[in-house]
Image (cartoon, rainbow, N blue to C red):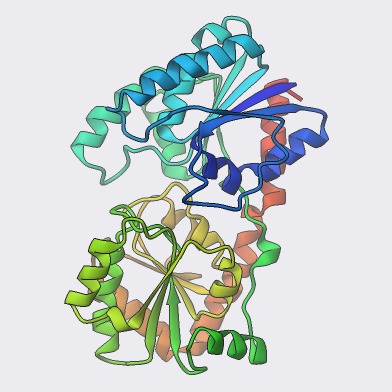
Length: 376
């Protein structure tokens, strides 16, 4: 089998799909990939298992003329290579790839689309529904297999009668859960000391790039409430900071900047999560949030939005709070601050629940889908 993986940017392939690509390689498959190179922003991701890469000028903006150039380039790549399958990811990468694959499908190339979170969802703007929903509904007829990674998208695909030949639910993209665990004793104390924290500091962590969707200002408003009660609470923010300036200014303006740690793009997330007490998410919406799957050894406080509520059961392994309700989020954090026994109970629940989101579990699901499509 010969398959082309398509995503808007290189880092998406490197961060989320290499374990499955390696599985395909072990089965004798040839794998190509097409993307826009963003390795300057997110370096160090290994794509060595990919047999051939193509740089294609995708843009995340649906209005960009770059996507017309990307379509022409990608269609040529697909037409010349006679792929058995084109597996596309990310909204614009998948739109362009499915248009570019229309002729190839007539020659029995299978088109697979993994939706990492539709832009239309419960609570999305009317603009999002008007712009993205008709395009996805239309392109579903040119999709042999639609893979969804949260239950809201899966149910929406059926209730709105998407015309993909097959629709599957998969538990995300897979996480190497062996890397993540709570740290204790001297190891935790030593690591905290390296970052300037004390053993009795209460550390929150939110690994996420700065952007409107990740909604960091909600956490800053929450932190303002928390530090008025306990001045040993700090928030760690690993993630790409190219758009961080307005968020930093906001944190300074409301007086919480000294209690946040903007850490930039990191490759040691497992250590950072392990030394913290609590994982948090203020996101407006998610596909299936990797940062909460990686919160294996922590309790969680997160917004009650698509993706987050696939992973967090309120009062069982964490707390869900209404989007932008900083008072409720602060109260949830304080419950865990004041009750170490409850925090430990939530941690144990996470350890058990996360197994179905492991790399091994997701690879098995993906292999079964490829078998169902007669690709392997």
